Image (cartoon, rainbow, N blue to C red; front, side, top):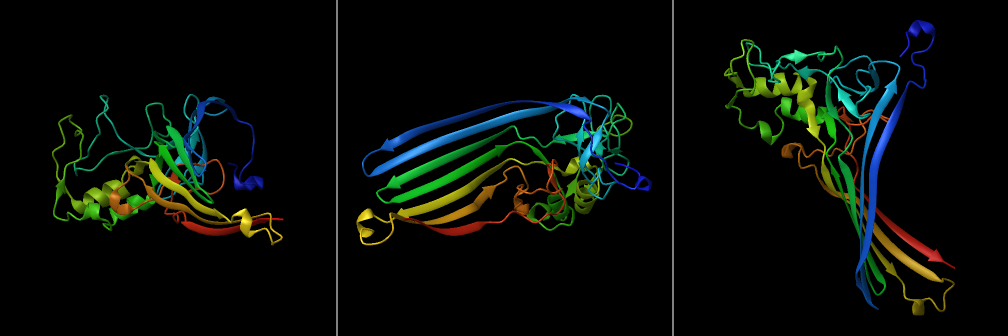
Length: 302
């Protein structure tokens, strides 16, 4: 970032070095293969670990609200030497020397703006543990059925949508209006926290307007990525036509998903890019969800 008085607001420069180590494997097998019926299955697996090994500054915010100067749902991707390139920073829950959460006299989490080294605290890592695709093709005579299931495991997301639904009491997880809560942690004197807070204080003051860390969720998701059904018109029906081949395909994309570590009532799909096109990852600033799409294709050869 540059001061606007310079005439520009940002400049681009090579400021560091990234090292990425990963593993990819692809395995395919014909489960059934006969004259009229076949079934082929493939599994593709990928995992990587991009780490910043050198850079000119201690921390560089390169995407998110901190990179843009702040905001209610404060959080950004950060480049920091020795850390994952997908690291997410924001305000954290204050901890004591033993790593216990610190709770103030009102029973709410205390907020930490910096870590022990004076940096913005790293509160998550958007890089997934692995991504796996299960791809199947079944053929019976002139019919072909294809479907792909995707599993993305791990990867953190700062979700403002989920935080807002919880903080405003709009989903089933907040239905116990009369319940009281005791946040896990210790008081300033080191004793175990026993201060009760009500439903509104827990969800509104801590999960919505408390430390950014409370709005970090595991973005693991299983998705029915694609289904298609193709019918190839038999050659005998094309003998008196100009076509050498004629096929009809109906397709559906993003037909079902289960983000199984998100609150069920939110029905939230982590397949969003909250900071737009670029290197940013792991953010949802109340963005619109991804679309379910359908298509129909006719393919002809002459």
